[in-house]
Image 1 (cartoon, rainbow, N blue to C red):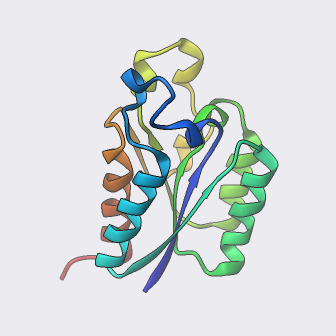
Image 2 (tube, rainbow, N blue to C red; image 1 turned 45 degrees about the vertical axis):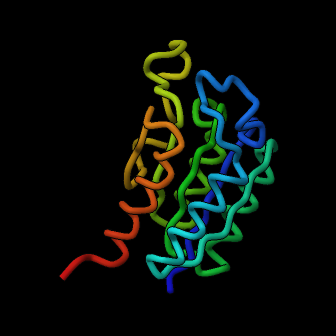
Length: 148
């Protein structure tokens, strides 16, 4: 059983009530519960973490290496576009990660078009809504447990 970490950044705790026309009506707790069940069905254990604070996100990513986490799914929210610290933490731990964005950041403001994380991500899923988390889980499962 592989350990997987789901990391969500600022304002994602407001999913379900924050701009539902853009982000949908699912809550973060609902997304996490569904993903944990799906991960267990695939033979993985999924831990979930959300913070509005950059340093806490960095600390949790660093802890992931000590915990033996095999893969990370991250939606860094606005920190995607600003945080070199998150990028450095992800690179420092050497754990493959998949970047997820619920909305299509390329159809939004120009400052959202650049990600500090994408270049080194194992995969990037953008604009698919909350199902993007599931797509990332399936992608990392295929990498951790190749068929055949």
